[in-house]
Amino acid sequence: MTNVLELTGVSKTFDDIRVLHDVTLAVGPGEILGLIGENGSGKSTLIKILSGYHAADPGAEIRAGGMAFVHQDLALVASMTVLENLRIARFRTGFGWRIRWSTERAGVKRFLDQVGLDVHPDTRVGDLSVTEQALVAVARGLADIDETGNGQRLLVLDEPTAYLPRDGVERLFGVLRDLTAQGASAVFVSHRLDEVRELCDRVAVLRGGELVATVDAADKTERDLLELMLGRSVEDLYPDTASPEGEPWLTVEGLGGGALRELSFTARPGEIIGFAGLPGSGYDEVPYLLTGARRATGGTVQLDDRSVSAATLRPRAAIDLGMALLPADRARAGGAAALTVRENLTLPSLPAFTRFRSVVSRGRERKVAMEQSQRYAVTPRRPESALRFLSGGNQQKVLLAKWMLGEPRVLALHEPTQGVDVGAKREIFAHLSAAAAAGAVVLLSTVEHEDLAHLCGRVHVLRGGRCVRVIEGGELTPGRLAEAVYAS
Ligand SMILES: Nc1ncnc2c1ncn2[C@@H]1O[C@H](COP(=O)(O)OP(=O)(O)OP(=O)(O)O)[C@@H](O)[C@H]1O
Image (tube, rainbow, N blue to C red; front, side):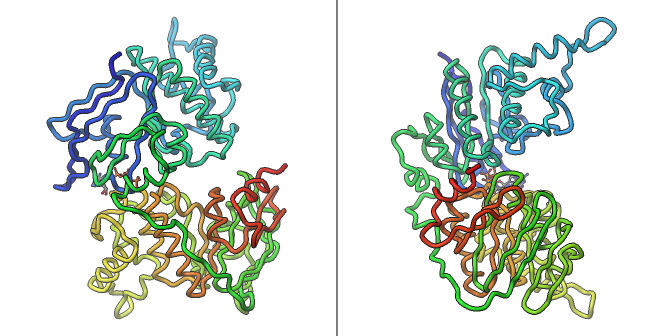
C-alpha cells in the first residue's frame, strides 16, 4: 500500500538560519506517527510546511493524500453552531443559492458519528465541553479531507490534548484508534511523552531541526524518548523543595469572581501552593483575580501589613505590591508578540532602565536582556528578534524571566509549562523553586497533578468555586489529587 505522506529532503531557512535540515519521513496507511522534539526543534515549522503556510527550501519533495490539521487551540468559532463550524465557507447551495440545511445537517451528522459525538448539529460550539470541542475539530478535519482527498486520510494533530482532562484524552485516543483501524492515518505532535507512547506506532524525533531517529513506540520508555530528544542523559525533573517555617504574610480572605465564589488561604514566604480542580471549579481564576488581571467581586488580599480590597485591585497596583502573573495564554495575555525579546524582558521594570526620568538606557537593557536569556536558556539567544519568532516554549521562558527580573514577592502562575518541552520544564521548575527559596510565595494553578504533587507543599482542591479539600504532606500524590479533583 502506498504511503499517505512522504517527505524527502525537507529543509527550511529563516534569515540565513536553517531550522530544518533535510528531513525525510513517511506515514503509512493506518499508522499513527508521533512527532517529538525540544522547544525550537522545528516541529511547528515542519507542520506549517505541510499545511502550506511556509514553503520549504528548494529541493524538497512532499507527497500527500487528503490531509487535515487539528491545532492546539482547535480554531473553532465558539459562537457558531457545530454545523456552521464544519461547513463554514462550503455550504452547498441549491436552486437560487439557498443553502439546503437538511442536506447539510445529514452530511455533518455522518462526520460526527465517525468521532462518536452525539450532539445536535445546531448546538453552539461554546456550549460543548472541551473534549467535545476537540472531537468537533477532528470531525471538521475529516469533513475537510472528504472535500479534497483522494480516499487517503491523514489527520495532523498539533498538541490536541493540551487542554483536555484525562477522560477526554482517553476518549480522543479511542476515536483516533477507531479511525486508524479503518485505514486513516495520523501525525501526533506532543510534549507529553507518556501519551505519545500510549497512542503512537512509531515516533519521529527532531533535534535541532534534524530528524535524529524514528523508533517503534513499543520499544522505548519515556526516558528513552526524552534522551533521544535531548541527545543526552537526563537528571530528575523536579527540584528538591523545602517546606518553610515562619509567619504567614500573604492572607487572602473570601476571594470571589468569575467561577470562584469564596477562597481563603494564607501563605508563608517560600511556600509553593497549588490550586487544582475541574474546568469551572474556579481553580484557574486564582492567579488572575489575585493580581487584578480579572476583576474580583469580593475579598481582601493582605500582604505583610498592607491590606487591599480585591475588587479594587488593578494590575499596576498589584505589581507595585510585588505580585507577578504568568498567564496561560502567553500569545495574547503574556507578552507583546511584535516587540523584541529585549523589550518584553524589560517592560515591567522599565523605570529601572530609565535615566533622567525618561531616557531608556539601551545599553543596560541589552546587557540585562542577554543575561536573562542566558540564565533562562532562551534559544536562539537573539534579544533583538521579535518574541513571536521564538518557539512556544522559548516564549514562555522569556515571560518568566521578565517577571523574575522584578524579584516578585508573590508569583501567580497558570499552566506555566504548557507547550514547554521536558528539558525546559525542568529549568522552569528549578527557577520557581529558587524564587521560593529566596522568599517568594509561588501560587500554581494547573491541571498537571504530577507537577503539583512534586512541587507544592500543599494543594487546594476547588469545586463549585470553593475549596473542598487541602492536600498536603504524605497525602500529596498525583493519584490522591486526581481522586479529589474527580470526586463528585
Ligand atoms: N517565522 C520565523 N522567523 C524566524 N525564525 C523562526 C520563524 N518561525 C520559527 N522560527 C525559528 O525556528 C526554530 C524552530 O521553531 P518551531 O516553532 O518549529 O519549534 P517547535 O519544535 O515547534 O517548538 P515548540 O515546542 O516550542 O513549539 C526556532 O528556533 C524558531 O525561533
